[in-house]
Amino acid sequence: MTSNGDHAATNGSSEYVIPLQINGKEVTTDTTFDVVNPATGKVTWKCSSASKEDAVKAVEAAQAAFPAWSRTKPSKRRDIFLKAAEVLERRGEELGEYMMTETGAQPMFAGGFNVPTSVEMLRDVAGRIVTIAGSVPVCGEEGTSAIVYREPYGVVLGIAPWNAPYILGFRAVVYALAAGNTAILKSPELSPRCYWAIGSVFKEAGLPDGCLNVLAHRIQDAAEVTNTLIEHPAVKKVNFTGSTAIGSIIAAAAGKNLKPCLMELGGKASAIVLPDADLKRAATACALGAFIHSGQVCMSTERIVVHSSVAADFSNHFKTAVQEIYGPQSPAPILVTSVGVAKNKKLISQALEKGATLLTGDIDAKESSDTRMRPIVVEGVKKDMDLYHQESFGPSVSVYHVETEEEAIELANDTEYGLTAAVFTESLATGLRVAKLIDSGAVHINSMTIHDEPNLPHGGSKKSGFGRFNASAGLDEFLRSKTVTWKD
Image (tube, rainbow, N blue to C red; front, side, top):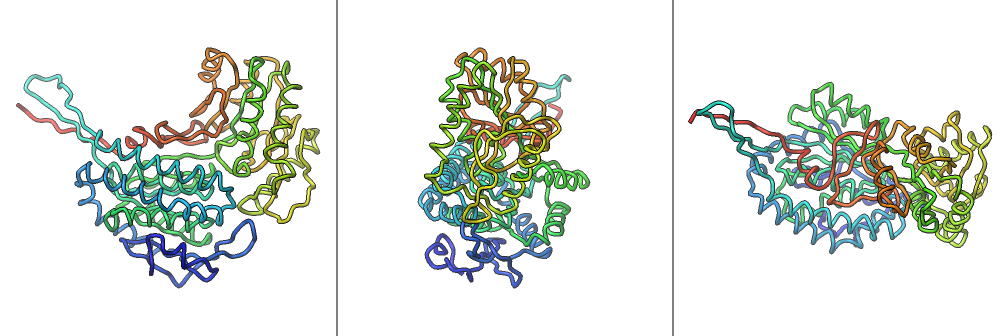
């Protein structure tokens, strides 16, 4: 088999089979599944499907690699991460193409955002590795001393989704690896070549065999393979990024086996537009925040909460922004499967039947494929409508009008989710005051709800999860303390 990027040039046919990566070797299995290009509806290539036995082999490889990797000097780990960043940057076009092919992403979101953000993540983490340090606290008893070490857990399982495969896939393992753990990266079935590429980048950068193992599997094998990984005694921690429904299942399995987990789940992000906001700026940010990547981002704007005194002016600016960015002059946005289109249309149809109205968009529009849907903006959504509560995860957004700042905050918090939010105001003091009262992991003042950079902790509250990726908080997630005392 070829590796390290040769696949891009030689394996573009539908008969190419993406291999698993176990203990530094590429493994092609007899059982495979099709990977479909959502833009064309055609099979673009196939992927090897891991069995229970493959899962065990991956854990055993990671377990065997852990002693040596955990003792590797920080400077050595740093250099491997910096090399991985170089490799990823050099292969950026290749990896961007994989993402566009498998997820339907636009070039701006794939090669223009996901790849460079992942490069920066690798460099940011590389610089933090040498800062990992223990402490020497003062004991209360005379003649007793102590030292607190910070140590890696062991084998970490990372499970990440298809929609931003490089940012979410890399972060599922880079903080664990940087802290001295070894890892298994479980790929989604919709974008497995992107995840193969993550393993390939690290392989080319010189990461020792067994430190990172990449698995993919058929949908029908998900429960068996995932439970095998979580239940294996060598797996010490789990991190999961994905839907709240699946996250609950993963967390329950981890809890049953008394294993800690880090969860970054769904969202129902609100963007609050206050009376003193720059309405044109807010409208553009809300349009981008709602419809980038066809709204298939956990941080996507789902609710736009506008003060009634500026509601009419904002609506005009917003409709203009949506038309300029996503209007008929551009192809209809692509969703990864037709299921997402059907879900959004069902939520909107039910809302319309119960009295909501369309601000812009046509729910009956016919597109070139059943995976395409143009943005739809709904007004008059009430609590008795599913659209009020459910994460749409698609190109639809609801606009609400409120009379007071307090009402806006109450509406933004009236959800089981708490991942991110936005506030638009010309007063920083007002923005900070509102931000403190919104129950979410992040609030962005005068920018869209989608905001993720490696040097800022990222995670949610409520049913959006717990724990934090990114920055020093991301490293801390994969380190535990060991206290040693002695008598002087």
